[in-house]
Length: 259
Ligand code: DGL
Image (cartoon, rainbow, N blue to C red; front, side):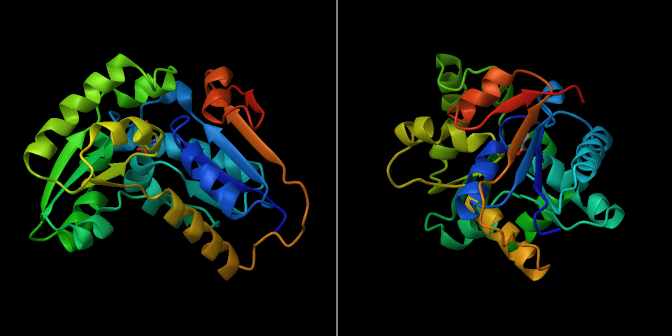
């Protein structure tokens, strides 16, 4: 069983930002990654639709023998993880916007959060914000349009720059000193964001924390792969393989799969 893969899914290619952290932290783990790009973005879908897509992805990964499932999508985690945990007999690791560390560290008492509509409107997000960000101004911004640009290979485009400029403006006017990236597609924007933000504004994303949590869950369940071998890394997309390959810097081989 410990030799079985870590199953990872996202609405598209964004969750590869989590896959990369997992692969660096646990290089001998077998991984299987599912990019449901055909149905991206999840962020504007209803809770029920997000749940049904998360069930479909989970069942695919369980069918491939996944020993744990990483929901590498804030939108799917905040809308579906409770149901998935109740329903399937494998451990799940999810990702949520890192509002807690930002709220604990801010000096200006103002933090910005960029995430999908599905995440920002979820009960789980509000619960976390109420719990940890009391007394802190949280400037929420839906990243409308960002995921479709990334999914179509327009990460480093003028359109992206213009969108980000609009989304950052109200945050900077309200003097944020932390920007929380609440979507697994957004770490790919860090080079552009770093150029756009003043030096005192720090960017927080949860990728490394999720990888560490995955390792800890595997260890607790005695599921860490003890074999030292070349891992099998399998990546599937139901849309454009070239775009998935490019985001992975052509270091892994991805395949098209109808699902
Ligand atoms: N990568 C996703 C997330 O973390 C989903 C984006 C989307 O499909 O809208 O929220």
